[in-house]
Length: 451
Image (cartoon, rainbow, N blue to C red):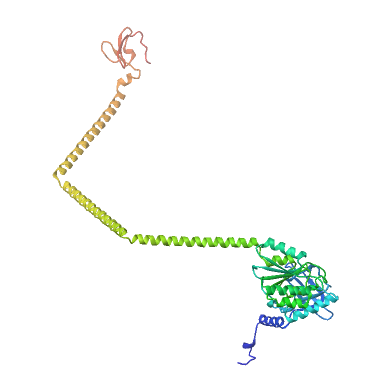
């Protein structure tokens, strides 16, 4: 396949930008750039984006929040600044930019120029490279402090260490931190700490001051001694806005001596909480292991007990007792079945007995007698009812019924003939009036004709 074949030479845009970024970052060391700020932007993330320009060119730059030191908020468009950082590329858009690690106002003083020149020289030699910096111990067994024994810095450091982790001992290596003799004393103190080999980490620093006051920490020989030191070195010079060559060559820069003490040891309370947590976990694990062993011991005890002669004999006794119970249960079941069978045969025999047939005939005869008596009673009742009805009908047409309503039958007293017309009687005659109950004999006084 040909070398220029697209199938073998084509890469994606992302791969291209990544290769360019690698070439730029590996091919160019960190350096100082001087220029004028323009297009300054401060988004809510806390990062700062800007352009650095001179009379004929400009470059985009980014100053990320975690890299910002000093009064970064004071910079504005039009300020002339010195920027220390590395060239890179933003892969997502392929934009060439400068990643800022430090920014400060541009100055023309002699010390400033000497400072800048030494910084460029040591940076070019790789003394500031991150990959050569040593990792601090998580909890040092002993801390060395190189500073003036009478300065405020040592008091601040000891106060913070006492508060955060008083169990870690501190060794002080005294040295001047200002003046012409200071660089040599600092180098000797550093060499003493290395030769004595009694500390895990070193703090070198002093309190704040002017550029001249801090100049001992910009010494080239001191910077090289720090770079060659086999022990991790924390630079803690001045205030947060102060920068020295020792800050860049040290394994870690602390903003203040107190800040170095905060960094070099963890919080005792945090460790105590972690230790308490570990102790609780160990106790839980031990308790679970003890419970598991106890259960295993119980299980083995049960197995041993189950295999003993006494347990075997007891199992045989239990089996014999169970078989005996099953035999008794079977016998009771057989007796019950035979009893039920006998009762069934007796029932069949009773159904075939002559006495039962006679008993049924007697019962049928009694039923017929009861039916005859009921029919006779019913017939007599119907006849009595009919007779009463006829009697009431006969009574309704009987003269006696008329008498019951207040009428009377009038007859001649002598002949007994019924008088139906008043002219058939004479005054002075006796008449008999038959009432509903009894009779009356009366004398006619006057006859009134009916017409």
